[in-house]
Amino acid sequence: MHFLSLLDPRSLRWKIAALAAVASCAVAVAVGVLVHTTTYEWSLNTGRSEAFQAVIRAASGTSGEDPPDSAIEDPAELPPELLRQVTPRKPATWHDDSKAVTWYDDTKPDEPWMWAAVREDGRVLAVKVDMGAERRSLQALDRHIVMATLAALAIVVPLAALVAELPNRRLRRVAGTARRIAGGDLDARIGPGGRTRDEIGEISAAVDSMASALQERLLAEQRFTADVAHELRTPLMGLMTSAELLPEGEITELVRDRVGVLRGLVEDLLEISRLDAGAERAEHVPVPLGGVVEESVRRTGLPARVEVIGDPVADTDPRRLDRIIANLVVNAHRHGRPPVEVGVCGTTIVVRDHGPGFPGTLLDEGPRRFRTGAAERGRGHGLGLTIALGQARVIGAVLDFANAPEGGAVATVRLDAGPRS
Image (cartoon, rainbow, N blue to C red):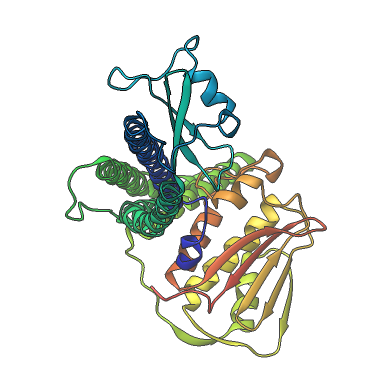
C-alpha cells in the first residue's frame, strides 16, 4: 500500500517535485536565454570588428593601386541593404569616425556573413567575413544548455521527491495516529519525535492535545457513569425491597416492573463502566457452540428459530458469549419484528430479524449508549448492542452490523476473527 502511494501523482511528494521541476525549467530557460543572447551579441560584435578592420585595411591599400582580392567593388555583388546603408542619404553605423558601415546577412541560416563597406572617392568598397563558425558554436551552446537542463531535471526531480518524503512521512504518521484515535485508541500519541517545532510539529502537538482532552473527558464520563450506577444500587435495593412488601395488585405489579427495568439499567451501566475501564478478562474454554447458543436463546424467554449446522466447537468464554447472544436476541425483538432467526455455522453466529433494519448512523458509527438511532427502532436505552460489542472485544470476537437486502437487521458474531484480550 505504501509502495503504491509512492506512485500517486496526487501526493504531496510529487506536487513538490513538480514544483521543483517547473522552477528548475524556469531558471534554466532564463539562464539559457541570457547566455544565448550574450553569446550572440558577442559573436556579432566580434564579426563586426573583424569586418571593419578588414574593410579599413582594404580601403587603405587601394590608394593608387588595385584593391586586395578579398575586397568587392562591383555594386551588383553587394546586398541591397548594405548599399542603402552606405549611401550618404542613409544613416549608417559609423566606427571610429570613418565612413564604414557593417551589416549582418543571415538570410541563409547555413551561410551567415558579416559585411563591412566604405565609400571612397565615389565608389563602394566592401568585404565580408564568414560567420558560419560562430553560428555553429552558438548552436552547439544551445544544445549543451538543453542537455544540461535535462540532466538537472533528472537530478532535481528525484531529489525533490526524496526531500519531500521526509515531511510526507511525518504527515502520514499524524494521519495514522488520528485514525487510531478515531478508532477508539485514545492512548495513541504522535509524540515530539525529536523534531524542531515547525508547522507539522504544531499539527502533531495539536492532535496529541486533542487526544488527551478527549481521553480525559471520556474518562470523566466513564467515572461519572460508574459512580452514578454504583450510588444507585443501594437506594435501588431498598426500593426493590419496599416494592416486594406492597400488597398485591395492578399498581404493585406496575411498580415492580418499573423497578426491575431500573435495576437492569443500573446493572447495564455498571457492566459498561467495567468494559470501558478494561477491567474485564475472558476465560476461554472449548464449548459446544450450538448448545451454548440454544441455551442463551432459551433463557431470554423470547421466540426465535435456532439453526445449527454440524457440531461446531469454539474456544471462547461461554458466559460472555451468552451475554452477547441474549442481548442480540432481545434487541431483535425489541427493535425489530419477528420472526427472529439465529444461525450457527462453524464459529460464526448470525442473529436476524425482519424489522426496519439498523439505522444508518448505527451502521456508520457503531452502537452508542442511550441512542437507538431511529424512532422506528422503538424505545430503549441503546445499551444492549453497546454491551454486546464490548463483550465481543473482550473474548476476541468481531461483531458486525448490517441490513439484509430484503429487509431486517443482521448481527454477525465471528469468534475466530480477532485477538483475545
